[in-house]
Length: 194
Image 1 (cartoon, helix red, strand yellow):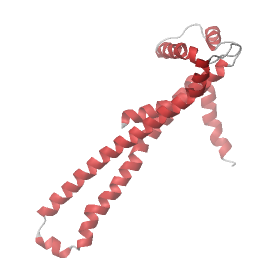
Image 2 (image 1 turned 60 degrees about the vertical axis):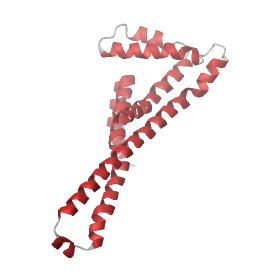
Image 3 (image 1 turned 45 degrees about the vertical axis):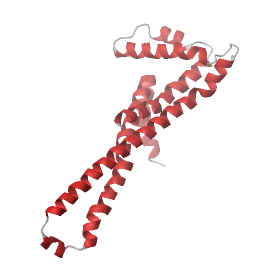
Image 4 (image 1 turned 90 degrees about the vertical axis):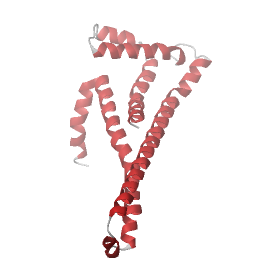
């Protein structure tokens, strides 16, 4: 579930890079020339990330059209399916994360119900004469069903959403950290009057 939640978060943040790649394809000057002119040398993790980004651009280059070049059938197919494939990856990762979380939640609640039944078997007869049947059934069925619903719906979001916020924020900082930081400062100030 955590692995698929990470894939979900990365797929969400990849839309920033995907729209950037598509926008760069319609510029007059290729992005690789602009980057070389602006930043001649990179170091450390930045160099690794630029290498991965460069390989991704090399792989996508024959599949996406470029301004001023005639569009081929392969490029038309790539343009039509580029963003839908990312949406598909995101949807599959979301489904698999939710499925795995539901599977684990079912097993955890089943084990909890078994433990409750073992505990009920060890209680004295005096307990059952004082406790109502409805109260005992509520503890076994209703409370564990509420816990199951909470685990299935809430626990997945507790993993997916923070990872998504972290990856989107990281990607935005990678693209333009000054704009990202200034937006984080100015947005709450703009929301206050609203």
